[in-house]
Structures are given as C-alpha cells and as structure tokens.
Image 1 (cartoon, rainbow, N blue to C red):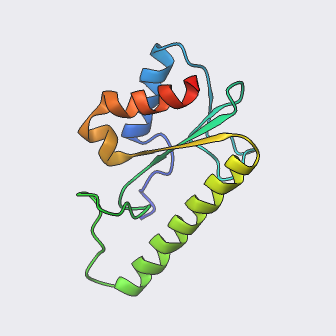
Image 2: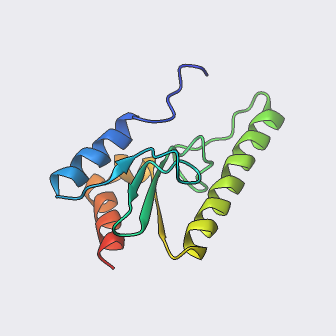
Length: 124
C-alpha cells in the first residue's frame, strides 16, 4: 500500500488539466486547508475533492467492492474515510464554502459531465 498515491493521481491530473485549460486557477493540495483538498478555488470559496471509489467506499458504484479477505480491517478503514469525508463537507459548508466531490467512476464514465459538475458549482 505504500505505492498508493494520495495526490497527483491520473484522474486528478486529468481534472486539473481540463479546468486549467478552461481558465480556472486554483491551488493544489494546500495543506493549510482542513482535509487537504485536491483543489482550492479561494476566490470562489470552493474546494474540490477527487475521490477514488474504492478508498472512499462509493456506494452503488461498479468500482467499489468490499474485499472478501480481512473484511473487518477494510470496513473500519473505509468507514473512517467516509466519516472524515462527511465531516469535511459539513465543515466547509458551515464556513460558507462549496465542497465539491467528484468520484473516480464519474470521471472514467463521462469525463465532460464530471467537469461540468465542477464548473456549474463554481459558477453559482
């Protein structure tokens, strides 16, 4: 698991590249923000989290399947990730920020819909 990247993943790089090409400017993985969002749009008061479906337990997703071995460990690990994701979203919303979550399956399924989801949220 030490080889698993927490930032600069293939899907995250694709999203960043497209948003930058559309003229959006942001900071990347800014550790001064709680939860280290993947992208921070400070002028728009918005943060973007690009979540891997497996690591964040995306319910109802074709990518996410609970492992059959060591199930207790994985349920605990993924459950903590989900709880942290909810807490971070509530934190940012309570501060008047937009917290946008884009899932791996959304990006792989229809990339332009995923980008539209971010652009629409930033336009509000």
